[in-house]
Length: 253
Image (tube, rainbow, N blue to C red):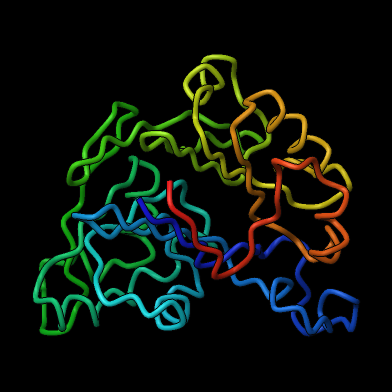
């Protein structure tokens, strides 16, 4: 399974215009982060986790030619806003895109993109097949996806384990039952927003503690605010098996 970080940033703590801080003005490409999203190429399927506002550019930048499915973690705008931009894949591939979402995300999609679900259809609308996630494992192609319950402050959201890979974003608290599901994973991705404590996300200290508890062979931090600091500086302070992800980072699991 090939993993590509389409985006590793967040809307949290990001200024509307460049604030001229060291991160905003950095020439290190690893500090230039679009909103968090992940591409998984599994051999028989191409899947994206979350389609945020930067989805179109992310797919163009990564040169993605195929798309079978989008799996959503939760309904916040920075994770769903780009759904409309599946249209070119519908047109070029002549197929519907499979959408996996829980009941709350489904309601948000129907509210934000009502025209997709309208009885009145016209050529060019995004074409989807909607699948409801109910907490039970589900298959996309040859791979089993295991939803993992995560709390984003008071909002229940999903992380996902696919074979030896686990992806979590926007976590603040993780129950022991979910930790038990994650343990044994070889590669973990989890959010690390900033150094200061945050109401709904792991900060750096909490993310490191969580990574050590899971004890994966390799952990990558994502959903990174510019408040965390420069990539090179932060990485130099991390344990050997923990790294900051960056847009475009690719590896195999």
